[in-house]
Image (cartoon, rainbow, N blue to C red; front, side):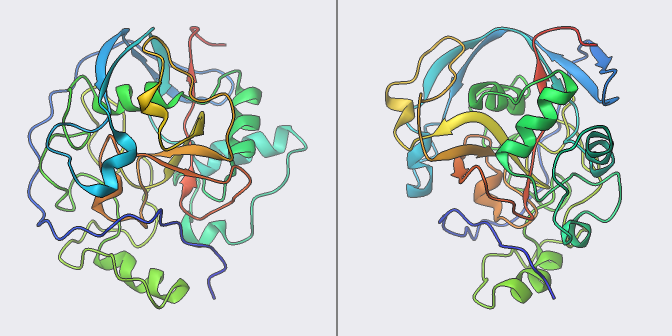
Length: 289
C-alpha cells in the first residue's frame, strides 16, 4: 500500500504530442568534486537572462511566471545531479538528523536514485552539513536553461517524448492511480522507462551539463514563494520575498505532467511537507572543501 501524498499544484494537463527534442549543445565548463558529499559540481558562469515565461507561454497555468524580466547573476557552482539517496544516507550517518520516511524506498529504491521525502528544512540541513546552500529560484532557472534563453524546456522547445526526462507517463499512471483514483494527467502515449524516480543522470544533460533539471524529483529552492513576486523582483542576484508560507519548488517530477517540466514553471509548497516527489540539489559560490 502506498503511503505518500501526490503533489499536483493545480496545473492543467496538456494534450501536446511528444516529439524528439532539439539537439542540445553542451558547453564545456569547469567541474569540481565536492569533498564532503563527493558531489560532482559544475561552474555556472555569471550572466544575464530573461527570467519567466516566454512570449508564447500565454497559458493560464504560467500566470505566476509573468512578467518575464531581466535578471543578472554572479557565477556559482551547482550539483550536476540531484542529491542521491546514497549521499543523503551519508549525511544521516554523520549527523543526528531525523530519518527518512519508511516509504521512500518505494519511489527511490537504490542509492543512485534521487532522495525524496525531503522537506525544505531537511534540504537546508543537508546543504549546511555539506558546506553548501540551496539555489535561489533565479539561480535554478538560469542554470536549468543551460545557456539558452526563453526556451520552453531545458533541452529546447519540443515537448518531451520519453527521451529527455522522467515525468508522468504511462508507467507512472498505475502507481499514481493507487494513491489517487481520480488521477488523470499521465501522458499515456509516452514511455520514459520509469514508474517512479530514475537513477540520477538517466537522461541527457542540458547545455551546462546539468542532469534532471526537468522531471525526476521536484527541487527545493531557498526562496519563499509568492505568486506575484515577478512584478517587483530585484534584477541583480534576487533572493525572493522576505516572508511567505510556501517555499519554491522547481523542475517538476516523475509524478507531474509536461506543463510542470517547463523551465519557467513555478511551484511552491509547505516547507515542512515530505512528499514522494520532492528532492533537491545544492550550490556554492566558493570552490569547495
